[in-house]
Image (cartoon, rainbow, N blue to C red; front, side, top):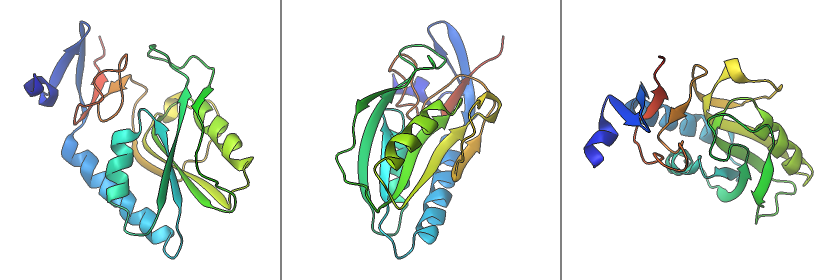
Length: 186
């Protein structure tokens, strides 16, 4: 039933979620991020590294808003499993295929909360001697950030709430919601 996927409020496993950021607001901000990154990397050919699975929708929309030549690759980490909060452990599940030595790398994340995954990825990528490593994230939960991470491009600052939609999941479901929904406070 697609109609519920555009509702102001939805119920997932008995819990109520309400729209935090609607589809048109997301698309406008992603276009702005694409324009800014394109300006910042004019004359360069950066490689965008998408973090699977959550960043896929944001990654695809962002790349379509990049007006310079670029390359793409993906890596996959696990730090959540099926939980609503990070396990505190990061595991690399899929490595890069590309050689990033002397390249300008842009990590594309769906959400940064504790910052642990960003610290892990930056360390992993810097060990391969890129020219630069920057981070673009759609969402940042600054209240939840425990690690000192530099985020170069941030779509939205959000409260420390559990969110789903636009690539973000709940037990691998609800990634296809067009808006971002937050768990309602009880």
